[in-house]
Length: 449
Ligand SMILES: Cc1ncc(COP(=O)(O)O)c(C=O)c1O
Image 1 (cartoon, rainbow, N blue to C red):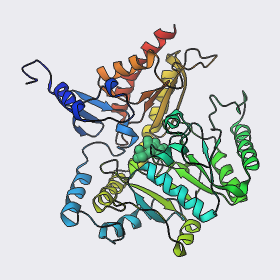
Image 2 (cartoon, protein in one colour):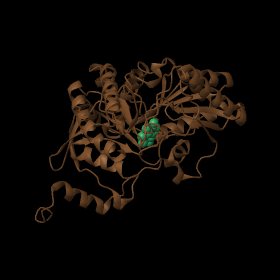
Image 3 (cartoon, protein in one colour):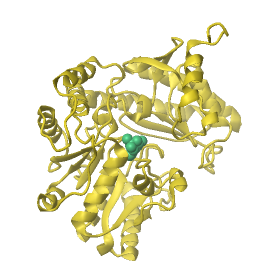
Image 4 (cartoon, rainbow, N blue to C red):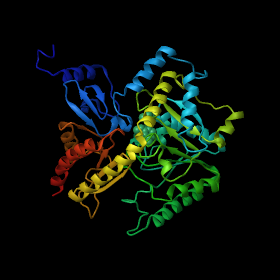
């Protein structure tokens, strides 16, 4: 019917999908999806045969890339062996995944509680922290995203939280180590000086709140969608020390930064800091199936040796999801994707610096490994963002449209353009896609000229 009307296969799919689907994060009349049919490595194709470079690894999650046979085969094999087991069962894959994860997580984080996504991992971590400490407050940052369920939304600091308020009680905010815009940063500060001010602000917050009421400090080790905020050296160590001083648990949300994304297994590895809990999802299975986990240390686990943990899901430790995780882990190891992310991360950092030198609309570029972003401004001196904090404006949508037209898919929101390719990217591919980004940025330059 659609072909007769001269409508492409992709447009026909989209029309039919819109008739019966309710899409996330959108006003339904405003959505403009891609009809995606297959993927391979860093690329995916739409229903009309157009190829896209996936510069956001879908939702910063397909770390190993698209169409990986070793994971697909493991999923099929597990479905044949045992498709489902209740969360209280022991399965072969559960035994093997726990052992495998414990070899890559920071020392002491050796017990894993499984869920289905990053949001529930963060909520479970909070439940655990409250139970272990007997305290209720959680310190979380403004420029953060921790998930879309009610509790995770309350932990989230950015504007996505507003629509879910009032949410979970007990969340207190502290400021981000965001050198580019932080009011705590003074021109010419060394990392040490800036870090000291950030830590003093956290300690002051603890004093006002009463440290004996604070269960945990939560952070994205490196902030993701709020602009790739890499903490200065010493920051994580300082927060760890504050937590130790006041008996507070440190929860690092590595849903996005885990499994090689930053050029290390986990973001915390860059600073040698071991939190009490790490929450993981996305890269854990490279999103081939939904799975999250909370990795906990002995302080947390020992509490629950004798106390009931009131939490769990029908799909906790789902064998097929665990099989996807185990196979993903092996792919990361066999192909040394952590090493490749570190090496390609250095190329990406140089390319981002080159773009900044070229384009007056770029205020700042930030990256660590293959987690990168470009922050656009109307004016480099005033740092006025190119788009409002709540998103929109005219220029960023044009930039996104140009990229899409030229076969590049990525995450563009507010005044941020993200550059997060799969970890299997080659230097040639990276240079080619960033050349298209370079062309797209002319749009921003001419808008501020
Ligand atoms: C840092 C971080 N934490 C948590 C989440 C929530 O994960 P999920 O969407 O799987 O619930 C996300 C998702 O983007 C994230 O980036």
